[in-house]
Image 1 (cartoon, rainbow, N blue to C red):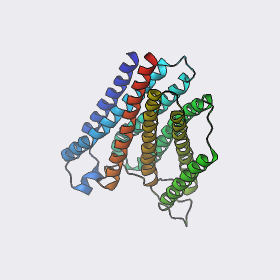
Image 2: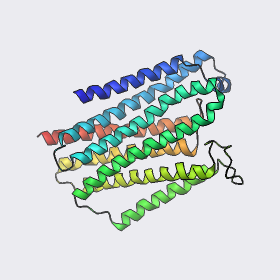
Image 3: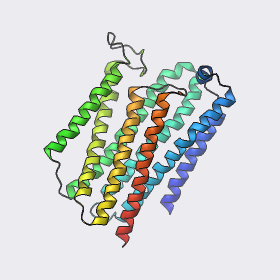
Image 4: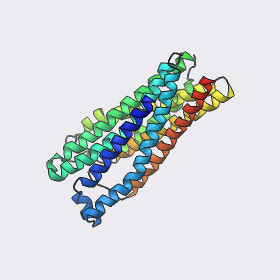
Length: 305
């Protein structure tokens, strides 16, 4: 019960802070000018767009909490520590979307008052997103790797090559989308959406993201192997749902990170296809967290029998 209280408490605090920032901070003048909005219309529009985001936050925290409940229940068993890491990684993914969103509103107000801070705000949000990605996927990967090794399962060369092939395709498209934002005749220029030289973007953003995504893809496949080789029909079905949930949150998170880093955003609201894509990816990720919650509840019941 204490853990449930803590999870709900953090979620409520985030929602309150987000609402207060959205309502009381000054309206972004670029958004007002672009879409011919009054300050009141801007705040109303921002609150409307907040609602589906807050639903996603709840699904994310709920799914992560349920998985942590199961991890606590099996903490004395062989895979308890690994499930705990997977649960922590899932929650880090949730925090990785919530925290930058809240900070983004606060930074937006700061940029309104001090436009010179705009470049630094973009750099800060980019690295914050990246940090959450590496931490969450590393935790999930450590957990699934430990479970696979304890089950004495090996990944075939054919499957490994397929995973590498997927990563190569992701990498090529990602690099293409990043490079098109730069003037390649001046590699040291910061006149680009990232506000950093191309070499620094490649070393500190592109390569770390590709590393994190490979960890995520590899973790999803390791969990698939565990579900495929699990004993007992009910246990196997529960693990399959967990695999589906992890696959959705990993895919959705990669897609969100892909969108935000390859097509950099701005410090104001954009009413275009990027916003629609963002919401579709949130739906996919939220569905994954709910699958994790259902799976964790079923696994918990099986352990309690």
